[in-house]
Length: 183
Image (cartoon, rainbow, N blue to C red):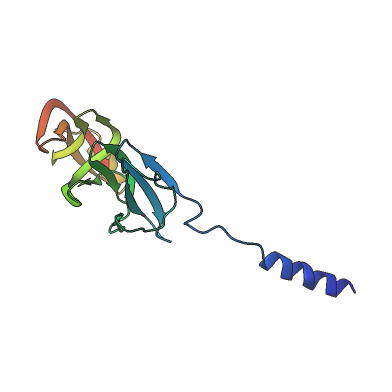
């Protein structure tokens, strides 16, 4: 009798419903868009852009592709970083800095910017972004810690604090620089 109860308990445990990616979603909204994050089953995120319309039901926070939606499949481990106006800003990578920076224009349904950046301290402001950008090679002279990092199996690079204009994607360098380790 005990063995029968254990078998029924195991059978019951296997029938418990599991939530799907469609049922558990992370969404980001602006006045024009709802961005739904969808699992890839691996690293990175798929993105579903739902356009808000003046009339009709507002979009639902579920990763279900409907007519008129725009799907951005994960390519290289992308993650949501920000949404400003028509721009979807994605972080890309699986390791430490530098990471990929990808910007989509949702009104045009196309990538408008790709580059690298250091996510640490990166800021999205109205109309622009600021972040550290690799701009040079580190040496023992311009980066005193580079020798220590090399002995620990790391590299080093010189980074400059930059301003990325989100209207035309021009990069303006500041006079602020630093030396950063690289994996």
